Each structure stands twice: as C-alpha cells, then as structure tokens.
Image (cartoon, rainbow, N blue to C red; front, side):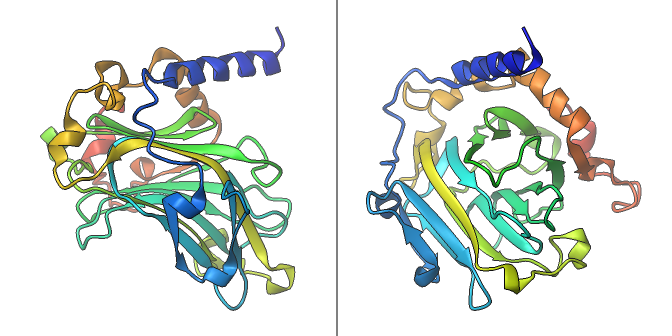
Length: 294
C-alpha cells in the first residue's frame, strides 16, 4: 500500500470514529439563508439560489461577514471553505465561535493570506473569560485555494479539538480544576468573515494587500451544525442524552488514531506555539502549557 492509500485509509478511520449514534442532534438545514444572517456588507455576500453555497468578498470598499441565527453550547461545527486564491497577502478569513460578551469565550480559525507562491497560514486561538494569547499556527499540507476542505470545531466539557479534513491539528483541554480558563458556560454563535488584516496578518504586517489583485473571494458550503441549541439553561447541553453524543465518555479524549495524526501535524506542520514562546511570556508560560493535552 503506497503512502497516498495509507493516508486515505487513515482519514477514513477518522471519519468513522466521528460518525455519531443519531442524526437527531443535527440542527442545521444546509441552507445558508435559513441558518445564518448577514452581519456585514450585504452587497459583498453572494448566496446560491438553493442556499447551499455562499461567498464573501473583500475590496477597498468593505469586507463582509455572516452569523448563525442561533447560539450553541457544545457540539461539533463543520464548514467547508475554499480560500482566496492567488496573491492573498493581508487578507484574513475568520471562522469562529464567539459569545460576544465583555468576558467573551471564543474558538477561532483564522486563515492568514500570503503573497502568491507562499503557503497560507492557519492560526487558531482560544478565548476563555475574556483572555486569549493562546495562538498556534500551522502550514497546511495542501493548497486550500484549489478546492473545498472541511474545517471543524469539536467542543465538549472535556476538550476543544480543531480539525482539518477530520485530522486534529490542535487540542485545548479543560483544566479548569487547575485554574486554567476553559469555555464551558457561555453559549456561542458561529461567525464567518473576510476582512483586511494587513496591519499584522502577513509577514508581521510587512506584506500589504495589493488591491489591484482584488476583489478577493472566499467560498463556503456543505456545513453541518451538530450541536446543542442554547435555550437559556446550560444543564440541557451538559446532560447525558442520545442527542448530546459529544458528552459520551469516548469523546472525552482523542482516540489512538487521532493522536497519531495530531502528533504528525505537530511534528511536520506546526510553525508557532504560544506554549514554546518563553520570550513572549518572560519565561512564565501559561499554566496549561505544562498540562496534558489528552
């Protein structure tokens, strides 16, 4: 079996491990017009007639964005994204969960554009009780502008897992019992945006947006929201039930297959980890950096 076949087989195993016991917990319709509303620049948001795909545009006039109609506490969110092609330096595509409170919780995917020929950088971050500074960055192992890829957030009381095509690229574990912040009480909405981040996003802000290459377009589709809809009481989302499959014991940590892939990403694709940045934290790394990830 060659390497490509091995990779396909392992991804198949990962997908099987994520198949749930019931479809009753899926709360999305697959129609962007029904599950989301535009929050920024409607003229820069284009949705297919069947609602199945949506694109965002960035030009010198404006960026654009949309948000889910509902808020959620725990579950899994999948979104297929095709990123801005060509010279995307200075652009940022953000796909994230946020509670929109002063002491907000937030779980971020941020795709940082680059000059033509250089790879996209995927930055992840976690806010807990208003505090962040938990950035990690990876180089993707494929060209994310050529086709759609699936980016997932899995979130329960035990862990937050960031996944790319079902491969776990980051784990943020719940160590609240040791004084580490973890999003566990505030419901969050799903937000997606495309915006001008050229003050910082590419090469530390040295590579600016070349507006002559615009407009810049990112596309989205085939999303799934398999999560607990917030109805005012956290206990419903924390309960052990057939629909709250994410609360089951077997989802409290990565599986052996997931750990294998996670280690592969960390070894070959990680380019920045706040837990390795002693200079930034003056040799006083955050407490979670010394605690296990699974």
